[in-house]
Image (cartoon, rainbow, N blue to C red):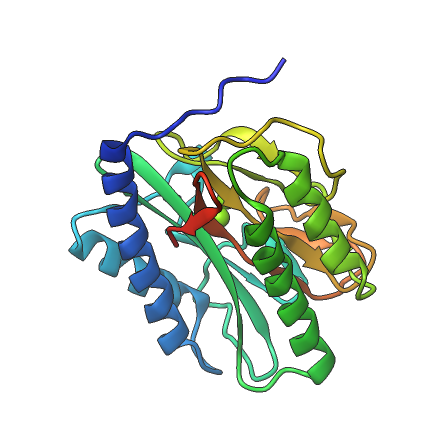
Length: 250
Ligand code: MG
Ligand code: MG
């Protein structure tokens, strides 16, 4: 019933760690560049030139036809926002920057939601809780745990604060392909789903909205927004499952 979840070799992991390091540097560059007045296209260009300068390839560009190196999703945009010169970040915005680096045959995938200037306290709290959902998910990942353990802790962390996980968007395995099995839902039951084994690499990505979690896709065919217009947040790590726990690659 389940498709095979790849187990990475040490040689695979050397390549993935190198890709992850470049992705970490790209996200740090974005963080340093974010301020009111910058466009999401400028962030995209910054990331793309950094990745290429390191001898790697932007993992998202051209993937299923996606036109850019980052997804930049502002406020009520949930995922897959297309960078644009017309999208100028303003004080009080939040922006999810999702990025992938492909190096020597392997993908890595990570996202952070950044604050622009000084968002409202309730929005900052919401972003913090979505980050906490990822931190809590990391704590349950180890050899022998189940994929459903990750889903359950993400759902609980978000719902306990009155927010909603976006169940249409899922995490996934990552490696030779950007999206590999298993699918990692953002809500689910402990003890269900495939068992994790040391050597699996997962892209775990809690995605939430301040409202009811329903989403729709805009006419550009990419940008997913919250149906009720409430802000959305997204955090993602590429994580190696180990015998006793996990290792965040990026
Ligand atoms: Mg991603
Ligand atoms: Mg992903």
